[in-house]
Structure formats: C-alpha cells, structure tokens
Length: 142
Image (cartoon, rainbow, N blue to C red; front, side, top):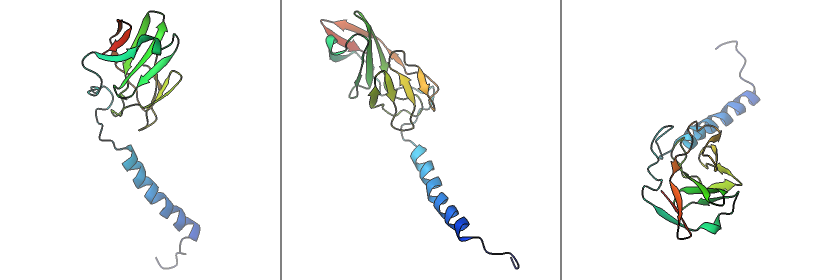
C-alpha cells in the first residue's frame, strides 16, 4: 500500500519462525493409532497372558510389561490390578512408568497405574482394566 511503512524486521522474523512451528504441531499431534477417547484398545491382550513370577511385583509397587501392553500393580499380598497400557486418547502404547504414574509418549497423557484413572489430559477416559490372577506363582492377565 502506498504510504504504509514496511513491517519491522523483528515482525517479519517472528512470523517466519511461527509458520514452521505451527506446521510441526499439526504433524506431531496427528497419530496413526486412532481410536480417540472411548475407542477400543485393540492392542491390549484379548487372551490370558503369562507375565512372569508373582513376586516380581512387590506389594505397593507397579510393573510395566511393554511387550504385552499391560501394567500390573500389587495392592496387597494377594490383590493385583492390571490395566491395558494403550492410551485412551489416541491409542499409543504407553512405555514409561514412574512410580505409579504411566506417561504416554505421544501427547503426554498420564494415568495412575493402581486404578487406571487419568492424572493429566489430553486423555479423558481411564485405562481399560484387565482381569488378573496368580496361577502357580505366575501373574496371568487379560
């Protein structure tokens, strides 16, 4: 426009820096895992899976079984809880456990491994609880 001063160098550089970041945000938030909140956890075990010795999970502790997409928490000597570790937000497998906190690598959702409840969004649905028992000294879930 005639008579309009050109934009300041700082304004142009800021705009240029924001465009690639915005594009990356769209890519990073897109996932092939699909399913969204309320979707099925098709990667969770659908049949009983032997997870190993029952004493591998100490009372008051949780253990993540990444190959089986399961977390097991031992509530008391004879009470175990198991949950699918497929995130209910976009279906990503959760691969990080800190104490009793499960952390999804895709978008940062966090869950309590002892009850499956959401601790941090973007997920809004709890993890799917799985049946779990001890048979012949082995933890069996799914």
